[in-house]
Amino acid sequence: NAGVTQTPKFQVLKTGQSMTLQCAQDMNHNSMYWYRQDPGMGLRLIYYSASEGTTDKGEVPNGYNVSRLNKREFSLRLESAAPSQTSVYFCASIAGQGAHLDFGYTFGSGTRLTVV
Amino acid sequence: AQKITQTQPGMFVQEKEAVTLDCTYDTSDQSYGLFWYKQPSSGEMIFLIYQGSYDEQNATEGRYSLNFQKARKSANLVISASQLGDSAMYFCAMRGPYNFNKFYFGSGTKLNVKP
Image 1 (tube, chains in turn yellow, green):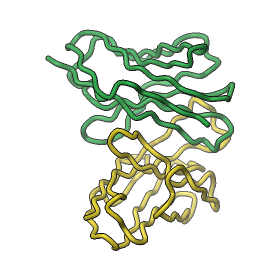
Image 2 (cartoon, rainbow over the protein chains, first blue to last red; image 1 turned 45 degrees about the vertical axis):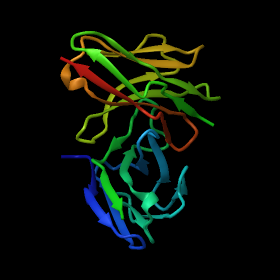
Image 3 (cartoon, helix red, strand yellow; image 1 turned 90 degrees about the vertical axis):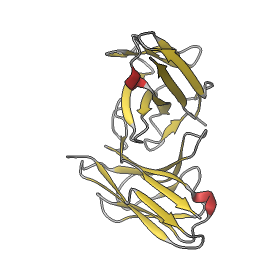
Image 4 (spheres, helix red, strand yellow; image 1 turned 60 degrees about the vertical axis):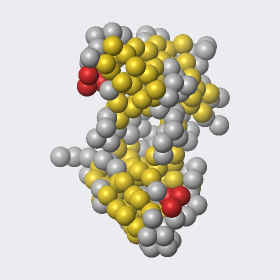
């Protein structure tokens, strides 16, 4: 099925460990995003990639890095995990900068990350 | 800067009744889009309904309608004839034309439908 695939779905890390969250879309979308979801705070943008080869910081980028590996894949890396990064992480994509305003995101199913 | 406000952290509604979930927004853009997403307990984000800032008619999608009041900058979601399966988190979101397709999300409303 076409869509956005995130891996892993669940992960437990110890403080200081590193890991990479993977995201891939097969809809030929230009723009991809990483959000984190915390209780009572909705979804907050971590990083985004408007097009292949570009990445930019969002609202809460500290402690994260991203790589737009190709048009399909956008990964999020935690270099040294902290308990404050315990959250649910969503990857999303959209057709592109010129997409009509009625185009919404396509979301991945989320990654539930716990840092102990 | 854009901002979305959902003032109802949680709501209860009786099955088969209608319910309104509030959303206000703040933007200096003239052209923008407003969205509602549903997040059931399974965690996925499901698109429900869209309203464009220049649309004169309120958007409707089945049992969902969007009460759009542009002057008041509000975009409330109305769910008619609530069903048990409507129990979920609901997020209001906005996107503008000049910000690389970034969406801004509200903090969400947890809706519980009682049998």
